[in-house]
Amino acid sequence: MSIKPGYTRPLDLKHGRVDMTHGSGGRAMAQLIHELFAAEFGNEWLAQGNDQAIVPPPGGRLAVATDGHVVSPLFFPGGDIGSLAVHGTVNDLAMGGATPLYLTVGFILEEGLPLADLARIVRSLAQAAREAGVAVITGDTKVVEQGKGDGVFITTTGIGVVPDGVNLSGHLAQPGDAVLVSGMLGDHGVAILSQREGLAFAADVVSDSAALHTLAARLIAACPSLRLMRDPTRGGLATTLNEIAVQSGVGIRLDEAAIPVRPVVRAACEFLGLDPLYCANEGKLTAICAAADAPALLAAMRAHPLGQDAAIIGEVIADPRCFVRARTPFGGERLVDWLNGEMLPRIC
Image 1 (cartoon, helix red, strand yellow):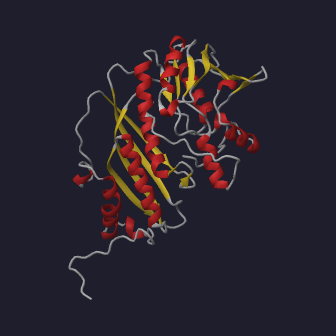
Image 2 (cartoon, rainbow, N blue to C red):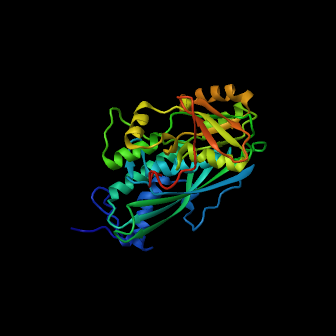
Image 3 (cartoon, rainbow, N blue to C red):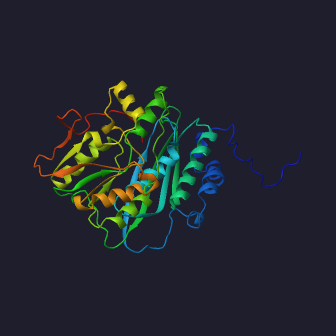
């Protein structure tokens, strides 16, 4: 049997596994980059093949966000670590009013990871990036010994541009403002937990992981008094609102009965002793605006596919202690404090 000169056996993406040579900087690493990463992420900037990507400067103000992704398991109902890496970074940019443009991606791979799993993750990440309209322009790959990682860790940096006249920040909330959320809370945290622990509920719980930049752009256009937006990921809505309260030097009062939570998520949280206000979300945002503009902002949310279950859930109040409180369905009031400890580790 003759072998074609210069022939290199293609990666075995069906049965092969990551080994230390894939991070060595040699031929095997070059092959992994060429046959998998470059093939899926291909664009004019990545094709430059340099140690950096040189891109044209955008107009407006630059927005930059960096995120690390260590979710376990790697695949879960509604997504995986690849799509999650895109959505998380795009959303961090979008909450500041930025249009996302570029992503850099760093992979830390554990020796022994099936190449089929890696290919599935890379393809998912590439598809999510295409759907969000962002280009993966540069990246890095490292391999650690078996037992010193957890399959795949991904680090991303996102670059976007904020138009002139858009100024959103966590320190801008004012007493009298309205607090809104774009939909059902807790889906991602409960989906991860159910997959990790093998729990079955009466109805499937699917992660809400999604890119929110088009929803954010619609809200900016619809509401001149929009003060800020945040995506309540780790620590959930409760922790996010506590961060805002401290930044702005205000208090926040919630109407617990108005906060949208799916019945199956609420039931799962009650069964497990969890509070849905602290469960992670990856496709929801909370927004604060002047009370007079809240109906228009709510209508804009509900007109978007990712905001159909949006609700006005509370108000900003004067409170030098910066407490977040919630009126309960029974007429009482409870403190919604910062998350203490780690309720659900490794969820993003």
